[in-house]
Image (cartoon, rainbow, N blue to C red; front, side):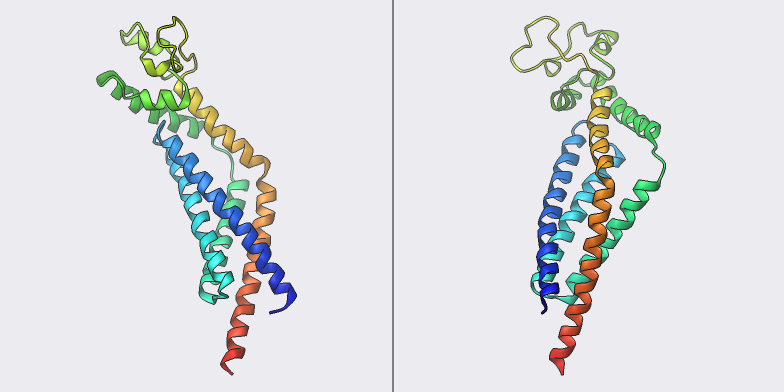
Length: 216
């Protein structure tokens, strides 16, 4: 195998490690959000993380063993990822719809809290928030003191030391912070993904040609 192909293999494997790590980060981030809200977009984040992780494993194994089938499958994953990224970049943002989904999701948890106190605990602890729109929500349902999960650790006995931000706003902040970070680096990611796709397709043809030469 020539120097060009060897360099491409090294570059692809380096990016595959990064791709796999990013997949793990997305999965962990998505799972942490599931504790606060059952939002459809969160499942998309987890799915993207899983796809990245599987693609990275396929890519590393296929390239290291010069396996045509695995490398071709990896190339398809990368191309699908590239198409998805471009579509996500050019489609109009639906911030209002996303906020509505978050509110509806947390409203279900809040309804459970009204019937069964403690249903909001995991959400409030993980996001450091209190109530839907704020601690005043507990006053509206006849609870004059917010639950312990509304307080920072070791401060449940201190008056007015509870979290003042509502869980809807806290969830929006957490999700949109990730979205802003993604938006700022989208074109760079698209460019890198395009290069990976070209390298992967090139290696598929090189591996295939090499196999044909060995047969004759």
